[in-house]
Image (cartoon, rainbow, N blue to C red):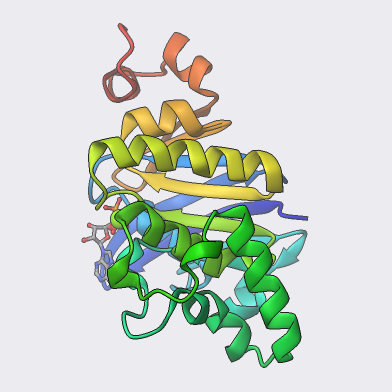
Length: 238
Ligand code: ADP
Ligand code: MG
């Protein structure tokens, strides 16, 4: 469960190939970070995995099944966006419950799942507030709560902390890492921030212009960067 394979996955927008054929294996329970400069294709790759974009070629496999034949909602993945993707007019509770309402779960089950997620995320006292009455970090936790209640096989994060201030980013980084330790669910985390990549990842995928430059643990990339780009990006001395 939670194993994701990319086999020769490509993406073109019109005539422009933004992702040349990519092969990548993400193991169950791994915390994988896609890192690279703005425009290198991180979000596109995540959206291809989530099914929010169709591949132009190749196959995305989730737990051994061809996901390209599966609707996004049935892939068992939960995408976490930046906190501004919350519904401002709905309470925290309703925001977290939203995907379960859409799935038409019984009210008692929704209540139980929302309460459990709120507990994990320290949001129990804030369930009746609106997003506008929360701090940036709390809002980001609500966005994560909306993903947790769906019990996904994998969480996909697209630069979730980029509109938080520096101190809060450090906090949330630790919270997301702790969440990974307690849930042990596969997480794919997109960032252009080297420090986030180095401190959070089991495995880092360094991207440049849609290409994978190197895949490895933070220590491997630091000690043996394959080229100047990786070395420069990771900040090691090669
Ligand atoms: P990143 O998330 O790393 O900043 P993106 O995946 O958003 O990069 O973009 C990768 C490349 O694909 C960029 O050159 C971008 O302009 C292009 N791109 C992304 N989405 C579209 C789209 N819907 N139509 C055309 N080009 C796109
Ligand atoms: Mg992006």
